[in-house]
Length: 398
Image (cartoon, rainbow, N blue to C red; front, top):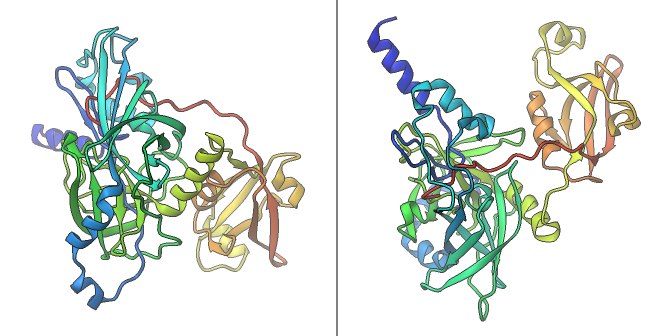
């Protein structure tokens, strides 16, 4: 392979990096990881889109968008890429020359970071990203009117990268609402607000680029891709539809340089709403467990079942005494839908289960040789799993 081809391959590898969220690692040859994301907006007519005014909406919802500043005392002196979550670690595996070049701050120093958030309750409840506040020992929130308040973290969920803060401010605060069951389509207009590079209340606009993106962050990946410019510091900020409703929480960008190239990702509002509600009430997320292992449908099985496509998820194993076993699921069952929503591949069912709570009930549509049937499964508590930490190298901006 030519030198030019090798350089191009390295560039593409770098461009494929998806950051955990507005994280800038200091030191020689510093690498930039940024997070942001996008979600769905209700279908709008072309006429409505033509008369839509971003300035009016920014004036309406802007007071509920906040800047988040975090800091933490450093205990480790060196940065070790092996301490990063797996999907961030891949960046250093693809670019080995970056290893050993991150000196990081010295033990005893404080490092600071910045991100965004938005108020969802007039009593001072704020949504942001877990990677913005997850390891901080001091969190401050700056409102659009310039007031600054200490914030406490009510709870955080590294798997979905969401966190909930609380500030005690006099009076009722401006707030925004999540869109209920947003039905968005690629091409619909959106507006992002946040705190890029610490600049504070910044408005950008774009369109929905795609839905259901899997960026390798975890089993619950269901990101909305959009092209409203977002940068380090936008993490945790809202993505609005043209009705001024929050359709996503900006969480990650794809970028070879750390700056916006028009590919941003947001956590959809239905996921955010559910996780935020649990964090507010319990401080953590209690996930459900079905008790099956799944595989894609191969052409042979599809033929045996008389299907002309390979959609669905095949049950490979049923855990004894699990909810799946108690409900009557069998090895070889083909799951084609969950709660009426099509299961095109195993990840669809994994995603649904990963954001479902213990004790919740799912109805699975199962296809067997003798026909299709509905099987109700009541989820148990998910087995304990190793806790995914935020990066130990702390951000200067986030």
